[in-house]
Image (cartoon, rainbow, N blue to C red):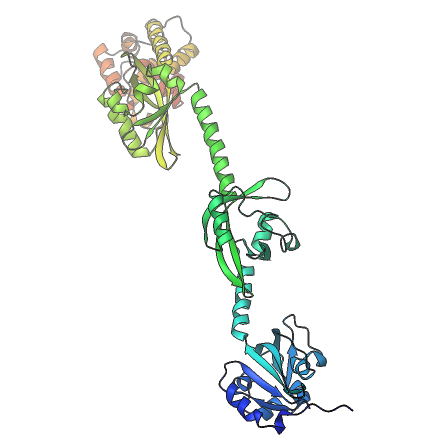
Length: 502
C-alpha cells in the first residue's frame, strides 16, 4: 500500500528552515509535495517583483499562470518544463537559465538561473519538501547583451576563442568581411585552423601569452586568405570571460590598404628614379631652402663635369654653379617671386670653368616628407651661337639691301628681331613725319637716302630716327622694321611729302 509523501508543513522543521534561509542573497522557494508554495524568502519575492507569498501564487499552477517563462532563445517553456514543475516532480537539475515575464506583459523583466534541491525525510526516505533556488542574473545577461551588440556592431574586425580548447566561439562581421568568409567557416574552428598569429612579428611571445591567458601586445601579422595570399594586419589579444569561461578576444587593424598604398608609392618612386636617371636633360634635386643638392642625374654630371660624390650636399651657390652673383640673384629672385622657374635663361659654369648658356626650370616636389626642388638645365649654348651668327649675317647683308626685294627684307627683319611685341606703344605714338621716316626704313633706305627722298638734311633724319627708336623701344633699323610689321604698318600706303619741315 502506497503512502503519500510527508509534508514539511506538519513538522516543526519548517520554522527552523525558514530561519536558516531567510537572509540568503539567493532566492529560495519551498514547495510542499502537494504542489502548494510553503514559503519564499525576501530575495525570491524581490526577484519576482512581489512582496508576499500569495502574490507568487498559492500553488504551482498559480505560479505558472502569473509568470511566463521562456528560454534565452525565445522558446516558451511547456508547462512540464517549468523549473517549479520539475522541482515538484522531484527532478534534480542545475543552472537552468530562463527569462521571466509577468503575465499580461510582452517584455521579460528578469533573467533567472534556477537549480533544485529535494529534502527527504530521514526515517522514511521520502521527500518532505522540494526547494527551488534562484539567482537573478539579469544584470549579467544585460551586460553580455550589450557586449554582444557592441562586438557585432564594431567595424574593427574581432574574433573570440575559448582558451580551454582554443576554438572560436564568436566572430563579428568586420572579421568575416576582412577574410571574405561565412560565419560557419569560423565558429567552432581552432586557432590552428585559422591562424590569427600567422607570420606575427613576435609570434613566440604571442603564443606564450595565449597559452597563459595573458594580454597579447599589438604586433603585425599576415592572415591567410581562403583563396590564397595574405592580408597584412595589426593583431592584439585581450583575455576576457564569456559565459563564465576564460576566452581571448582578438582584435585587428587592417593594414592591407596601407600596404597597397606603400607598394604603389614605391613603384611610383622607382619609376621616377628611373626616369630621373635616364632623362637626357640635366636634372638635379635639392632642398627648397638653401638649394642644397641631394641627387643629380647622369646628364647633369655630363653637362657640368661634377660627379655626384663631389656635388651632393652642397648648395648651388657654394658650388659656384651660377656664372656670377647677378645670375644667382636673378634665379633666387625669380623663385621667390613665382614659386617655380619656367624657361629662365641663365649662365652656369662647369667644373673646369667653362660657361654654358641654359634654360633653367624648377618644380616643387616631395621626397619622403621633405619639400624639394627638381631642377632642369637645358643647354642652349649652341642655339644661342647659331642665333648670333644668323644675326651677324643678317646685319652684314642689310648693309647693302639694294638687291633684295621687299618681301625678303621683311622676313630678314623678322628673323633679326623675333621678339617683337605687339604690346607697348602703338603707331599713333609717332608723328606724321616720323611715320614717313619709318616707312622709308621699312623699305630698306639708309639715312642719306631718306634725306634725299624727303629733301631734308641728314641731321634731321638722324634726329627723327632717334626719336622713333626712343618711342618704340628699339636701337636698330631692322628692329624698327620688325616692330612696324608686327603692328600691320603698310609703308606703301604712306604718302611722302618732300621738303616739308619737321
